[in-house]
Image 1 (cartoon, one colour):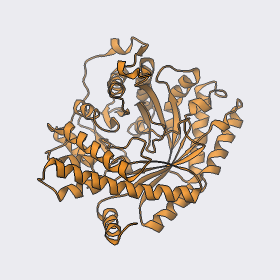
Image 2 (image 1 turned 45 degrees about the vertical axis):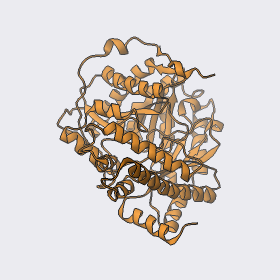
Image 3 (image 1 turned 90 degrees about the vertical axis):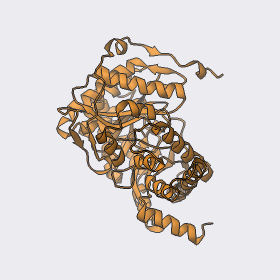
Length: 454
């Protein structure tokens, strides 16, 4: 039971501290849609999504009104399309028709994004995987709401370096094909190591084959709430700091749990997980970087940043797991550049570099996220950046990702504007030394020794 103080406290978080539920994501299995006839497959996919998700948006809006909790996004994730289209799709263009079907279904039910235009290639690529990956630039350019992800490595299997090389080229091609929009199609494309099956956040959400036929996953937010709580303990020791973050994360996660359970009841679809990630927005006061500054740094990127982020991430998880029995997805702190005004300020002040961001990804939830780099950056250099991030995930048994935007026609000193939740980003410099020979070796980096636990 909630007492009146807790109700008042939650209302204050919503009204003044940018607390929201970032997304209700409905995961839908498309395994029963598989057909060798491409038209029938497209028809099956459209019918399944529009049937299962028809009430998702109205239910989300009803929960918002009933509880007064903003639910920013209603989204859908589906089974990786490389698996679904393998029998019917003989060319990249065939896969592109599936992307259009996903887009049409998303529009029909009113969700803002649909994830799962994906391939899982951590150990090797099937013919269908390769065709889907080759179709990604055109699919993202021609659709509005489709998001794509590719899992390139895992702690158990190692890193598929053929896939890493290919994705460097695909990201560059995606940037080129959307250069008239500041290469914005790259915002909807992310590569992973150790991708989770139940992540509700885009662009990386897909409905894993281990999941039920349909499932409700909720992603909460709340960097502003954590920062406000820390302002009240400024100058206190680390024990007080940690307890404050933990208690705040508990309260934020309870809001997500409430929304998830209510959505599950109203839709008659099982509740999956709450992802308790601190996901920033461009709004002032809704920044993970500002939390790091409140902990005691002049700017994100200053000495001590990685330690402060490790502390924050751990306490968020500790508070969250006490609030819900089913915590999953990514769960921790996101550090995107374009979506976090504090991160943007740190880059512009010269405090935060690509290399420092990479170090920070060793201890947080995701990886190099929403980072704009010069459009002239070579595909092999992008592959090298991806390989480094995949290695961090593989060795540390954690999820890492890269969502990077080579802004065609722009260089260091310029910026790209995306609008909405995606914000804007300064172009960050990239190490110009070559890794061509390394990327062109081909094959697979083997799994680390600690992966052998049978």
